Length: 354
Image 1 (cartoon, helix red, strand yellow):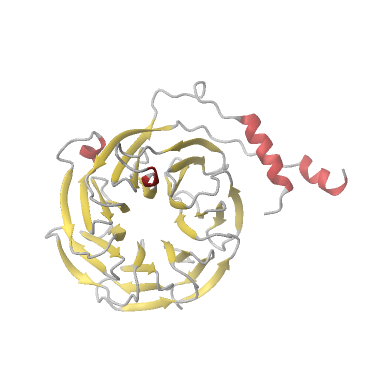
Image 2 (cartoon, one colour):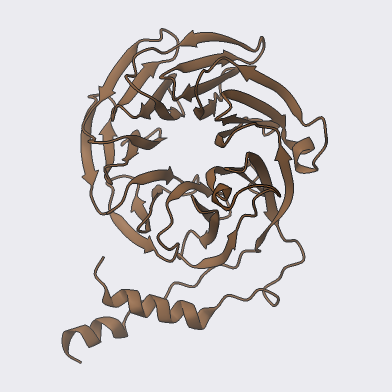
């Protein structure tokens, strides 16, 4: 009994929202190497993938979802190393790409040419993010800094220094902190974009943070590492909750849709689907490598929901792009929420401190 007994008695058990499970619908084999990055066009008509075969491929989303042969629109060549970051601009007909060849390129999609290079990274660039309201882009990589670039003049505005290891992912927001970086030194930093200084450092993770994601419906964000997924307040980096149960896998990608479905995808091909609000894991699955692949090629490097949130695309180590969708036949009766197990898990975690 005593003090601990009281604390446990009033543990609130959040009620998970029911979500239909996801199932694999289409596999696209187009790249000749690992598929490392993914971006969706703001009109939701197409998506781009970048691979270890050094090319960027742009697909028609609707055709790709049904597995049509003419889904591939164009292949862009120009990088000399794997393409690790991609982003479509919402205000210009541009696609930005970053690679392990230290290059950050701006492609004009009307002419399919590279029109700008952002030069300055000292090593491979692993991630890239565009600011939602300003014409700037932020790139981060193996030189452990995030560089903030003026899109038009190609000048480096800031070099955000402070991490001790590779920066694995970057989030940008229109409100402060406008830049959030996750690093392989297992910390997350929130930056003041105007001054170019670090505001807060979050040191809760014990393993490298390779993935960050933020929802459109609330000011929070989620980070993924091999120890746990953690959810944070978006303004001050206040710790909200752990999502535990994606066991000891290196989380390479996080994806989140409007409906509050969070996907964590790992190096060993495991995929966990969570209810973002409560932290309940409603589906665990493993991706299936293409026939003829090695077991080791069961890995996911990037994942994203399209803008409607109904299609999930994963980029994988078996050189394929896989498209998943929610099972329309499923209902709360066929796939019920495991309230008993969820309750046990909540009470067990209430005893632990972090």
